[in-house]
Length: 252
Ligand code: URA
Image 1 (tube, rainbow, N blue to C red):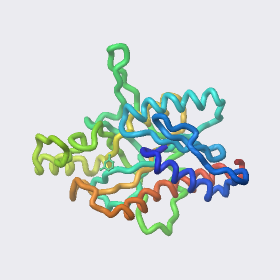
Image 2: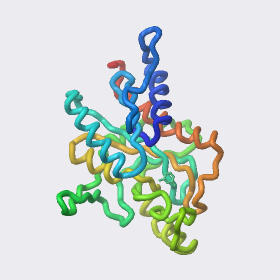
Image 3: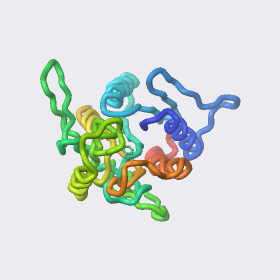
Image 4: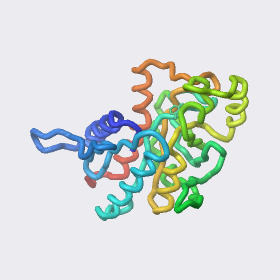
């Protein structure tokens, strides 16, 4: 899974190359569904966009987990490939999340059910993290690290930015906050808690692999060129494709 339809279309094409997956002559890979989320299938792999933020990916996860259940999928693995803001790390670094906290530092996903707060632990699968880590190409000219990911409920105020439509905090409030996060959190995105919680609750092995687009200690805006960001976005894709290739062997 990943945020945008374009990224997941690219990932489906990357997988076709990596797995040397051949379609029948005259056919080409196409979207299976494109109503709210877009989905592609390459052999046993679904490549699905999940939109922005906790509610969007949460709804999608309910639907995909039901789909996998009815399809009798055995030992499915769900991996989110995403983008994020780094805290004190070089932009372009790849982060494999080993824990998730929300904007208040809570290690759970809280949802209101029947008018009551329900808390679900946000837990990742350690074995899967290690398997993905072992697929890192040592020749990469960038770092791949593990660490805690903060899941914000917003891109602007929720991540301490000053450049949203409204902002009631100062530059120094922001820096104090981010400096305080450093050491506890390595990157910020917008889906990790619900992703970890719903997969953990349903017993599905799951991981998040994100590239960082910006060091938030140095700024709010994503100032790199389009080409640079496209290149960075491929980093989690390549790592996850290598993991998929290794774990499938030749069984597709
Ligand atoms: N996605 C986020 O949620 N935050 C960033 O800073 C970059 C990408």
